[in-house]
Length: 498
Image 1 (cartoon, rainbow, N blue to C red):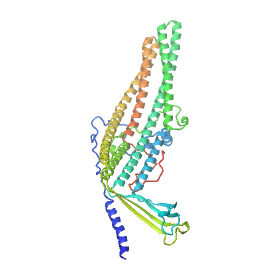
Image 2: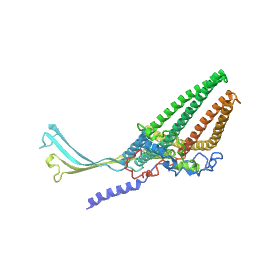
Image 3: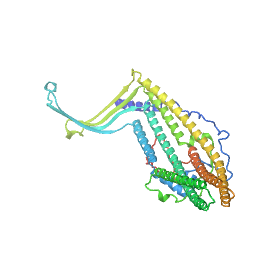
């Protein structure tokens, strides 16, 4: 009875000691570094309110609400399903999740079935009396491979580092997703702008060809000079050259959009002609700089990697302390296969091993120094990511503010130049003004219209850049937000680009 009590008490004490020390971790306590940016947007960075629009918060505005045009919304949905860069980012999540599960498996003992046998001939002078010359042994059982008792948190910190890398990869995929939404919007706007310039150039060429025919008739009648004819001819040739350039830009913009969408043919999804409908929400509320820490996926990813570097320090510190590994086997053994599972053939073995580093040539100390340096690098990367985000938002705010006013001014210039062209043409036909003034009015009108188209597209593109910079909703309002995995459970859902 005493021996039974002793065999029962020792494992219980060992399990109690493991339970007490399991909560021990040598990782430094994580504290979020202070954001190296102002707490408020400085004067001049926040755009003046648009009297015709109510600002919407980008933090809660989903992409399918930010895009108000149905055609553009369909194109973005297609890109989210078929874009190859986004698909690669999603597959990176799968790889990081698998790596975390591999590392996390070291925290629990493994079990494996083992079976084997040996057959050998024993030398005559080594045999026991009555022993045959050929000996064999057959065994089968359940084995516990070398399992480390994580007394100082080494295995747990390695698992924590893998978890943080997985979370960072997931955040990076969210960043890639919202970037893709913004890129599709901007590519669509670039194509629309190129199409508008192409139509404008086509109309301009038709007008100049008509003017050239009129001047040719006047030249034959003796009311126009050869200089007037050659000036009009040169302006017409310039319009033909501009037409080829705008057609090239339109085709290339279409190709760029098709690459982002990722489907073989997008002609059916594209409008045949530019539309004057509003494509995007025209006013976004910037919030405060501190909100970037929550809503920018790239900042979240940088912080997750910083947390992982803290866990690496804990694992490096634990390398200085003893490591205890347990190996055990429970099963049956026999000299004959037919008697393997017979009565009295039970065998077991229990082999704990203690390893204490005495001299490693400075390896452990160097690994700890390396972990600290990598943590400092992660801090610098985290701070740089915040500063970059702050700069991107500031630039986008400045662009949306100034481009809104510039668009108003460019529209006024285009309207004025149109009136000037009409009056100049009427005065030229009436013989009041010479042909040179009429040509200058044509040049000014074409340049003003082109500038208005470009600035209008730039303003809409700046809105998309601001939506991305503010970390606007990366998921569709009809989709469930991604659930962050807890430290004790990894979601088994398959990630998808859509």
